[in-house]
Image (cartoon, rainbow, N blue to C red):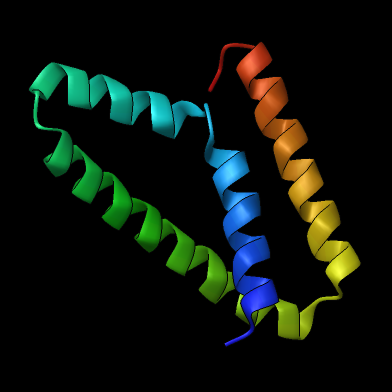
Length: 90
């Protein structure tokens, strides 16, 4: 186990998810349902599944494309999503 990679991944994901829509949705669901453990388990499983998809795709794509092109594609995707949000289309 590469602890440096594990801890840096945890730190980046933890900070990226702090205060985002996922956290706000989980807080809202926990407040509405009064079942925080069920919301926690559902959110944790969902995040694990989404992370698994990301890791699998990243692992495959990383074998075929240089990292610089992956970063550029991610940047373009973020810009497109941002523009769609500003245009109220997302």
